[in-house]
Image (cartoon, rainbow, N blue to C red; front, side, top):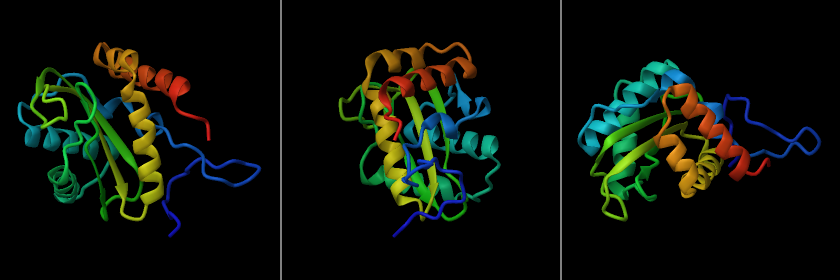
Length: 177
């Protein structure tokens, strides 16, 4: 089934093929928190969802949090050293969006390595955005696999610095199409 997402997903002008979607296209400085207040997994997810809804103008009445929590219950998204990509798809969103947060102290996120998680990238998509959702998760994974990119994100001094680190990592690790 083709994605029918009312966002301007990048397409190749010559072939019309869908190009790689980038995290930086879905973030704005208001969607980045350099010091999360939460201390538990559930609190982190709720704080990130609130950040996402506020910064992107969503009012899901709890649907986004419910979907992200359900997805997280299936398997932890703490798959990288110190980093996690919680995500979900919801009827109440009309476009893909992201929010990012840092926890300097770290949070027990049931990660694969058992270590505290410090870096969180929350992704939410419309229910019908399956292909774009999976492509973007793969692109975010490429970024978070690199130690230098993770370190630059973890040491960002401002949301703009964080966003610049995302863009720098994307130029190095995310294919153009």
